[in-house]
Length: 178
Image (cartoon, rainbow, N blue to C red; front, top):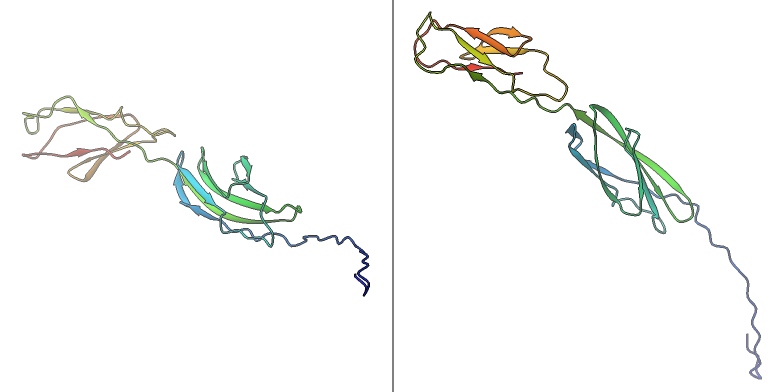
């Protein structure tokens, strides 16, 4: 304050400003349906706060967590299943709020492969042809081999080999989905 003679005096009071409002976490997960070993991207950049967000803590549902000041992370799952991803946004005052999203992790696609001991000059109803699918792969193991000739299922085997003769002329297509 200043009086009419130009003499001044100052008084001060300290004000304690607090933040008790938690952030509003928001996240997108893409993709939400993945295979084992495929990465998902978790984006929390649409999260808001009345001041600022200091940290994002991502819990991926598989025992792994990541705390960062960056709103976008990626994560890779090693096992099949359905996982709840949780995001906790925390502001500098320690206020926190959590949201969750679900991701489904499917097994990887098996890879089928087949060879034959011969592919030409097969005599009808006489020459046997041996097929081998042992180069087929799947990370969890192959349960059985489903053999088909011209799209018609002819055998299911637990071993990767199959032998047959042919009773029709012309080209025959032998397939083995695993």
